[in-house]
Length: 91
Image 1 (cartoon, one colour):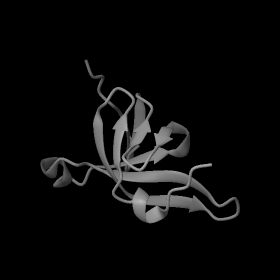
Image 2 (cartoon, one colour; image 1 turned 180 degrees about the vertical axis):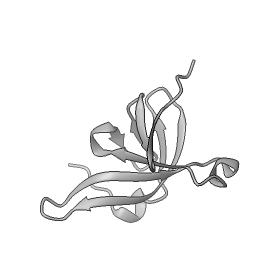
Image 3 (spheres, helix red, strand yellow; image 1 turned 90 degrees about the vertical axis):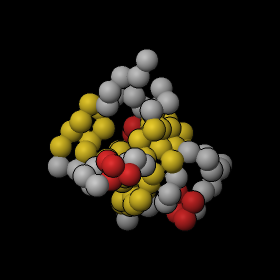
């Protein structure tokens, strides 16, 4: 079993399976009774996009892998704060 602490998850780069850079983890939501991470909150890495406060919510079921280097999530739909956005396809 691999273990990674919260300090290393916060700031972890997030990308899709196809390689699209989504941003970095800035927060997470924990279900207390089961001690399980439910959601990861990600902010854009692009400074211009950050001016518009784009925040993504990634459900734990969308996460394919987490390593010390990055988190990889499924291609497809991710939830933006207050909306749902379809991630653009990459070539």
